[in-house]
Image (tube, rainbow, N blue to C red):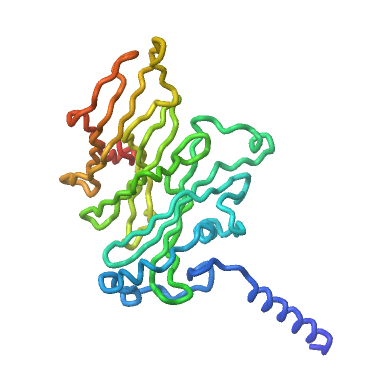
Amino acid sequence: MTMKHGRKLLLMLMVLLIGACNAKTPENVSGETANPPAKPTDKEVPAMNNESQKATEVQPPSPSSVLYFIYQKDGDGALSYEVENGSWTTYWYGYRFELDGKQYYTGFAYDTPFKFSKAEQESDPAPDAKATITQSTFVLTAPGTESPWTFQGSDRAVGEFGAYEKGNEIDKTREPQSYRTPGGNLVLAIPTWYLAGGTRVSSFDLLVFNPHELKVDEQRWVYLGNIVAGEDNSAACDEEDGGKIACVKSSGTLSFVPKEGSDLPLLRVARSGTEVVSPGKTRVLGPADATDYNYDPVKKQYQ
């Protein structure tokens, strides 16, 4: 090798090293995508029963980190940006939970369908066009360090929901609910709402988390559908001057009922308030109006 060629090779190596040092990685998270860590073991995960207070003080991964680990594309802090082929992602919801002594954090997002042509990108979404739910999950492995969370995995297609290529809105007036199944999985009910014909529909979007070692055809999270909890038509009702649209408002309380022979529970929504029974007439809801939702293994959703 000549001295001239040796200098060129040395210069190229220096440029590559500088670029690697300046590469952007999500804050407070270690994972396979950025600085690969050793695979965490049970011994490396702190027991939450002794240090739960300390663990809860650790900030979860940021929404931008959640999106980065799903799409491998940095959005410069944006919560919604184009990822590929005309598809846009939007951060949706973050959930922190403890299961069998481990603390997890999952960030959910949704993305729109691919749109390859300019005409597709500029057209308005159809009412029945759903969004695809995505997720990235982290495990708290090193509280008190610069990277307390370890990236566990992500899914680019957990399920489809919503309308007009948007996910259902998060209802911040209600709390999420969860249920640990006999098999050790976690059913999560996220409070949401959407509009239907001028009526605000309160609902729950349902997902199940599998903490076990995954088989080839399994995912960490799976979407189980949407169930209705209540309705409020105050924005569209008309009771004055002989109006025929009565004003009604109802709410629902969700409970999980263990079901023999099934790992997934029956979902029961106890309803209260009022509902329309005929044009201009309403009735008061009572205990007999509770609605049960069963998991349909064929449709793979609650019905």
